[in-house]
Length: 193
Image (tube, one colour):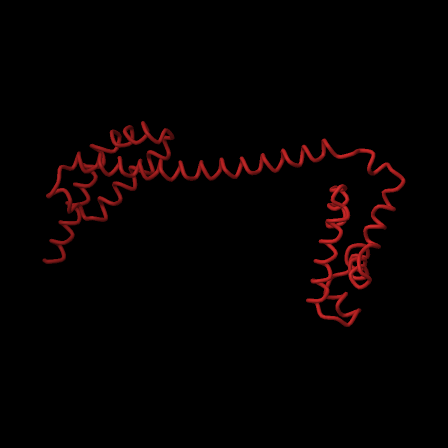
């Protein structure tokens, strides 16, 4: 008998919820859509509000004005939604702005790039002199890595030195070549890629 009473109450609760849903869903959705614009976003917001109402076992119904509760809940969800969208949009805009700045820098770099630089017969001499200006061990490691394409671990094994030594010598090579080739930025990119 107790089981039947519980089932009756559950059926009553479901019927009451369905009646509330049917009576208020459309109005709440129109209200939400007025602010969040996209219909599917408004539907999701209103569905979430009704889901909360269902999960609270309609306890609020006896203590509050249902219409006011629903509008307040939808309004608050819309505020949260819009706040989140605003943050996401600001982040996207910032990333887009940074990307555009990087593109502009690359564009300006290419525009100002001396086209004759690579057509000069001395280009190989410029690179060779820059590499030759490195200390002997540093030059040897740089050539093995960047010219011959060997991995740092292999270079360490071949020269019987630690990988840390290879890394530190490469760092020295990068620093010195950056100084020597500062007027030839594309060459730096070519050497370091």
